[in-house]
Length: 127
Image 1 (cartoon, one colour):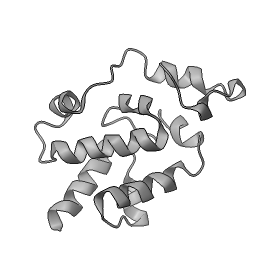
Image 2 (cartoon, one colour):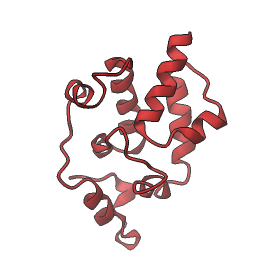
Image 3 (cartoon, rainbow, N blue to C red):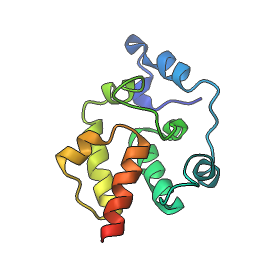
């Protein structure tokens, strides 16, 4: 697994931790990821794929290994510890990608990809 440049610093000890979190996971194509995790939901493949693309662009392609319920306020919090501006940049990137406004309260509740997709889906359905 290749990690983004900001993970390479061995003094951080994070490369090994992230490798351990993602051990045994496969980078699933969007259609298979959707089938496995979202097929029984009312959230479209397009929304899920675009969210995954935003995450990959913002924090690295390897983070396509995140599952919908991987909570980055708990076991996956290492992701945001690596880049103090990561949460803000992700918030702005999602707003830009989906042409929506995300409140601070909504942003704070986005603790996993599933919650991100539910909030975005709800906003897009209201539009």
